[in-house]
Image (cartoon, rainbow, N blue to C red; front, side):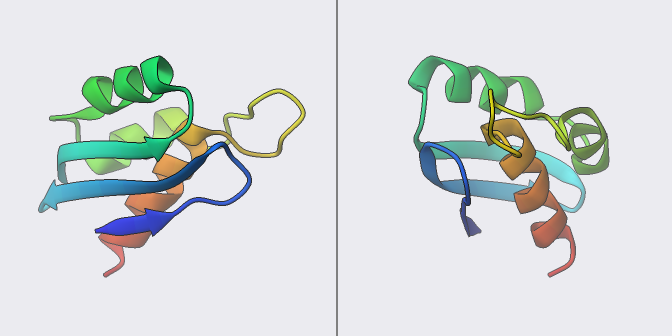
Length: 80
């Protein structure tokens, strides 16, 4: 699935789920090291656990962040 991000430096997130397990995550744009780190940390994790850890994280003065946007993407993917 491809998720178009809002309010962050990355433009989109590509993710793959196998039932509720995160199989892969790729951020397009954003801070490369940080987004790669987040993607690797959540791979193999239950989507609901990742959402619980990342939802609501803010980046500086922004109301969202790349991890928060990943949480939103996971919620969208789980509802499809």
